[in-house]
Image 1 (cartoon, rainbow, N blue to C red):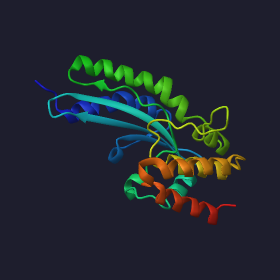
Image 2: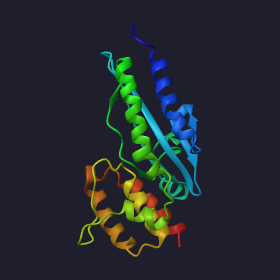
Image 3: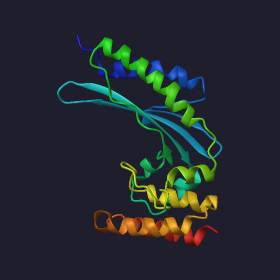
Image 4: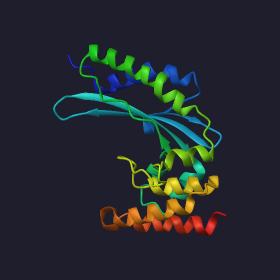
Length: 209
């Protein structure tokens, strides 16, 4: 007999929740995430449960740190849904692998692996105290020639976040980064993302010293 999907999800969340709630995280049901306030925003650990149309079930999780000021700057011109804007993260840890939940045996293994991810990856990342300089360094990686390194899966607001962090941190690379990012975004997808980027840059120029 197949265990109801809601029961499986509840058991996974309960199996992981004790590790997180003891560290001050609270479960947010509407977002299927555990979240904890920080001095500058929130630490977020999000669970993504998937049930395919052929009966496979799995979950994976990923953590991120949200800096409220940076996210407010980024979303001044964002076209993302307002509800989605409230839970975006500024920097993110690597997501876990897909972990299957097709049987009670897989469920036990998956909960154990999720707990290991939380202890070894998520909590060390989420509970670190990040300065603006830290955020700028993490977002604006460059090579030995000072050229930005573009990474897969950065998201369509990645460049805005990097420049907002650099500006707030007083990063001396700000203008060079802006020049490189502007050229890059003009070329990506025939400039599809450029208007939103340009509007964010206008906000930064007009509102940040």
